[in-house]
Length: 339
Ligand code: ATP
Ligand code: LTN
Image (spheres, rainbow, N blue to C red):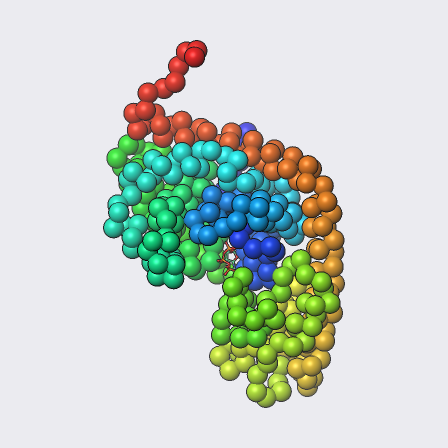
């Protein structure tokens, strides 16, 4: 039976030793919430992770950690197709075909490529980094995804994905669903605890600026308590005038499913310190089971690998159908008969 639910697809790269709170609130948690309503495909883009400098031992370790963290955070491998990109060879295969209908200038205009090349220097930037967007297009188009929930920084890549789908369809016949560029409105952006003007990220300046989902919850609590706050004393959401307190309120509201207005009312007349103490406690309550579950999953890598292999099998069932149709339309000779 084919599902009538819309298909959503997304992924986060295995480029750190732990997801941080920004990844959780801005991405993984939303994916978890969407699992039941949509037909979900989530994956770990390890092919994308090697487009910048990487270490093989670290990559393998990080891929398992991210997988365990997704599951611990609530991605249910029974509800979602959940897999590692390199386990499904169709991604690289379709990416090649898409490379051949992507203009050189078109790829060179991608701001992520320009930014990363400017940072690394053009000799350090690889062909893989240049082809990052067509591989991302392949990730999406293979599964005929309707919606792709991503952050604002990925908007241009999604636009290119749509362009490539339309170009292929008009040149070779209707093959791909053209996905919607879905930048989730509700995607809360979480800011650095020490510098609320910058987003919380893997590469923030101060280690106290980010909360790692796998760190000691007591350390995380300390980071909340030492978060930079603003002038004044009133606990009120005002991203312009009170970026520090507003960030803490966003985190608090997400972790408790309460509204900001409700929190503002509850903290009327109280001090910043009260809010921080309560949020620090909440953080411990939130991180402790998440960390335990992640470590439990990590302690049985064979089971984790089995779940990922099952996901890859389900992914290939879909991806291979799309790729076969693409190859046929391109005019590649079918492989028939014996060897
Ligand atoms: P980072 O900035 O930490 O390197 P990233 O955005 O470069 O992360 P991914 O690891 O692929 O790369 O991000 C996974 C998801 O997490 C993306 O959808 C991204 O939009 C989201 N995300 C990352 N940081 C934040 C944040 N501070 N607030 C909200 N969402 C975030
Ligand atoms: N580029 C994305 C990760 C990513 C992705 C995808 C997201 C790779 N392929 C396909 C959605 C759909 C990032 O850096 N967050």
